[in-house]
Length: 407
Ligand SMILES: *Cc1c(COP(=O)(O)O)cnc(C)c1O
Image 1: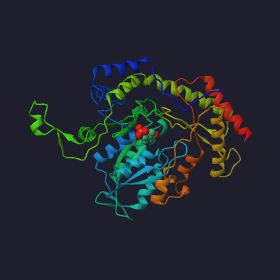
Image 2 (image 1 turned 30 degrees about the vertical axis):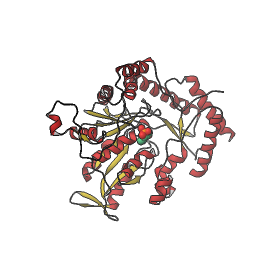
Image 3 (image 1 turned 180 degrees about the vertical axis):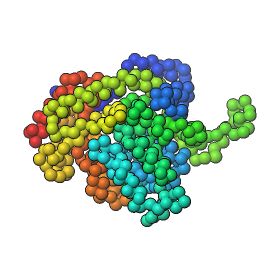
Image 4 (image 1 turned 90 degrees about the horizontal axis):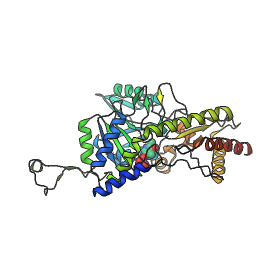
């Protein structure tokens, strides 16, 4: 029996050497290593400023707070995403308005959003007001899911037209690009994750990217309790004066121990990325040759997919089924059978509108956002990691086909 996990990090002796250096320095909280890691990521993504945090969830929360989001606002969030995207909006008191996604790229459906805005908001002096509840539409969180950018150029046009903001949730999308422009390079702030399920990891960790100096300064201050250096402090060389706390800040600081791992990881990201892309292409060809009921991830022209996750859709119609719920039963049976013989798979992610908290609070029904719901029910993530061999991949595909033929 094989044991094929869904994902496993790629560490070598460099991570150990980096951690050793930090431990020996005696400085383990946020310090020079975090600054080095921030610079390395900013350079990689070609942005001015990078602000490290404890996770992508806290990165999103911190960013939304610093941009001024509060309970008088609404924010459009694609429903097919990790729950943290919507939760970050909830933390601020604002309301996430869940949106439909495309079932081929899994990203936010721009036409659907355009229609939502046209039908539900009035433009009063350049501000979009919800006709029903009077709340202000602040912006859209564009999730660059699984390593593929959403249609950011089109979303930016829409946002410019309506005077709203775009924030990119790039938890999965380090290095993703459209026509050579990296995520984070479209003029919007973006947030990364370094959880072990993402392309590179620091155990837990996140980062906010921006070209806005003022926003970056505010993020740095607010991630560290809102501490500011007073005039007295600034003009004094004495170290014993405490900073001032004029804002309600957080402790969202990454440690230098985590950043040490990050520094080693980003140095080998080109290698990791190439390996992931090659393995994804190999899956594409195996599926094309052997399995007609699996749709491999779609990559639009000009997009660079980093394959943080390799997420397929099971085509329930090709299996002779006529609805999503029946298809879902087969998908789940397949995943269980795979698990039993040591092949880990997962659904892509969930449809947030179908999760208890959001369902109860906002009264969503599964088919209110039918595309997101279909992605939730029919998506299948295949194992993909640097150490995986061609034989492992062939085994995964052959096993899936064998199980499906038996079901
Ligand atoms: C993983 C993920 C997050 C949360 O990242 P953490 O670092 O675990 O907080 C947020 N959004 C998306 C789209 C994700 O995939």
